[in-house]
Length: 349
Ligand SMILES: C[S@@+](CC[C@H](N)C(=O)[O-])C[C@H]1O[C@@H](n2cnc3c(N)ncnc32)[C@H](O)[C@@H]1O
Image 1 (cartoon, rainbow, N blue to C red):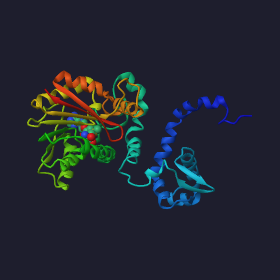
Image 2 (cartoon, helix red, strand yellow; image 1 turned 90 degrees about the horizontal axis):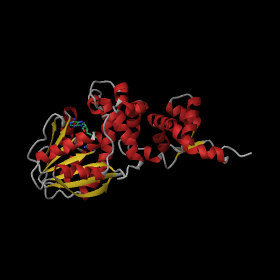
Image 3 (cartoon, rainbow, N blue to C red; image 1 turned 180 degrees about the vertical axis):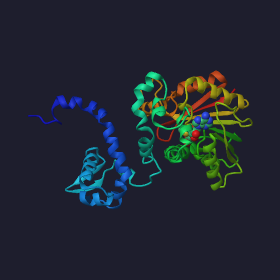
Image 4 (cartoon, protein in one colour; image 1 turned 30 degrees about the vertical axis):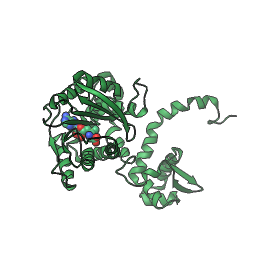
């Protein structure tokens, strides 16, 4: 008699089963991270179940369930009765503020519950997940994060971990030698700005972000001794015009949050704020020009709709180039950076 893994009827169901069990696998991963299991096995490889239960301060029976799930998900390797990290979980054994570890608390504490409202969000074309699960009145996640500094920290740890990777490549590939003053819209906690300022010592940078975030950014800028050239100002980019006097504008991981109409408005605002010859740089997750993927673009699009803003998605480079052209920026190229990001560049005519 064929067993479950060789029976062709069961095998053909496997791709579907992977999908409907995915949320259990994530919970095994998240619980293991919260317990510090991978760090523990990084320090003390080869512990037994009983030893792990003692270290995690839980009963042996729940420890058995946790270890069963982590082993079956490929997060742990079991040899005789001893457990080891696998190549999949090894990156989670240290550097908790870096990619990929910083993604797990973000998914667990911010997105997991809201994402159960995806269907309703599609029907309503609104972020029902945010409205049902995250306290506050603000229509966006960013406004509500300002009410909960722990959540805001989880978000900015994750965002910072991605931005550091991107920023390290931006300094390599983005030529800012011809610009004097960069405006960094939605510049967050200044990861891109501080990297770029160090790379280009002649460059001044103004970050525009929400007031609580601008405050965090200015603290970081001061701690790095860059306050003479880099500063963050608190504003709402939809309510206020952009500051004048800059000759380049950066939208880093910002435009995918918003609707097509709002993005066209923001790019037009950028065009109004600068003179001919000024540069525009959009850093955004890459999406295939024909809307077929990749999976990161699909996941983030669901997140922007259900949680972050209720209106954004990962747009294609081609769309950004069309929006540039409509308001007077000449598209000048595309670069791939970080872990699946694109930079779309243009120049004001
Ligand atoms: C996804 S983060 C990107 C941060 C940064 N650019 C980076 O690449 O790391 C988006 C940023 O937009 C800011 N933001 C959201 N709504 C905003 C608004 N209406 N005005 C200004 N900034 C806003 C958020 O506070 C957050 O820092």
